[in-house]
Image (tube, rainbow, N blue to C red):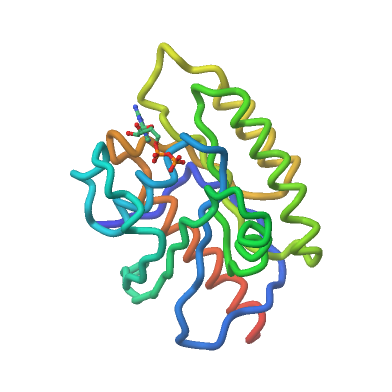
Length: 193
Ligand code: GDP
C-alpha cells in the first residue's frame, strides 16, 4: 500500500485549484540525464523499459492513482528536454504542480534545479504552486556529489518539499507522486474551506 512518507517536508499555503474532478497536471523539470524519463516510465507502468530507447513514448501520460483511499487523476508531462524555448515556457506555465529533479551524482544538475526554481517563480509569481525538489539516483552511493542535507536546505530556501529517490531501485517514486497529490488536495481543501 502507499503509506505516507516522512521524507516529504510539509509546507502549506493557499492555491488556485484546477476544476474539481479534472486531472492534475504534473510537470517534470530538470537537467538532461537526471532521470525524468525513468520517472515517467515508472509512472506509466513501464519500469522495465528504463534502458530502452523508446522512452519518448511517455512524454505525456494520464493515470488514476489511489492516495489515502481516494482516487486522483494525474497527467504527467515529460516535455522539458527540448531546445525549443517556447515549449519550455509553456511547460513552466502549464503545470498544477512540479517535480523538480536533479541527480545526487551531478552537482551541476543541483544548481540547475535552483535556477529552474527561480524561473518557475517568474512564471508562477503567486508561489502557491506545489513543487517537490527531487534528488534522484540515491542508489549511486559512491558517486554522490550532493548530500541529503544540502538538498533539504535548498528545498527550505525555495519553500518546497524535498525527497530523495532512486528510479533504478524504484525507491520513493510513488511517495513523490503521492506527496504531490496530498499537497494539491491541501490547497484544494484550504480553498474550499
Ligand atoms: P532524463 O534525461 O532526465 O529523462 O533522464 P533519463 O531518465 O533518460 O535517465 C538518464 C540515465 O540515468 C539513464 O541511463 C537512466 O537509466 C539512468 N537513471 C535514471 N534514474 C536513475 C536512478 O535512480 N539510478 C541510477 N543508477 N540510474 C538512473
